[in-house]
Length: 155
Image (cartoon, rainbow, N blue to C red; front, side):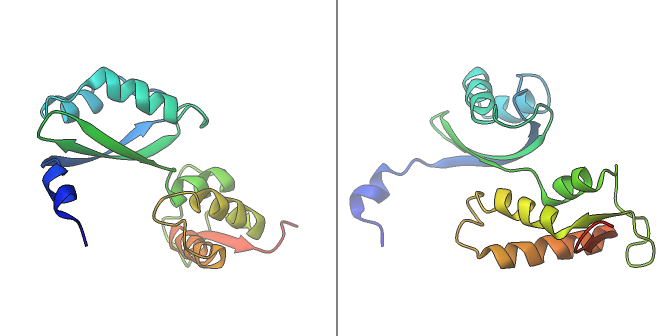
């Protein structure tokens, strides 16, 4: 339970903003500029911080970011790794999944690909306490709904 001091020092939240921004290339132009500008947040500070945090990823990797804007015009943000579907499409080498999942396979990935994606996703804040096996099962489920077949080994 929160103490009285913690409750009194909490900053009132103005908004929670969710964006998908390419890694290392946040600029004050759309979509970042208008989304943050309406809450009078410091665009350049966000762009510098975001680009610094995402420099380890390849450029143009779509990063999900959740920004909490406070009423005193300050902000905090959390950067998540790219989506599982993005990783699966990259591993399978396709632009999109199957138009008829379950009937026609768009491509195939190996269990090794699934394991590697799970290792990356385990670093996300909401997955850090999940067992790797559970994350792998979730990734296999996503692959099935995209029409990407998961095989033990590529022949």
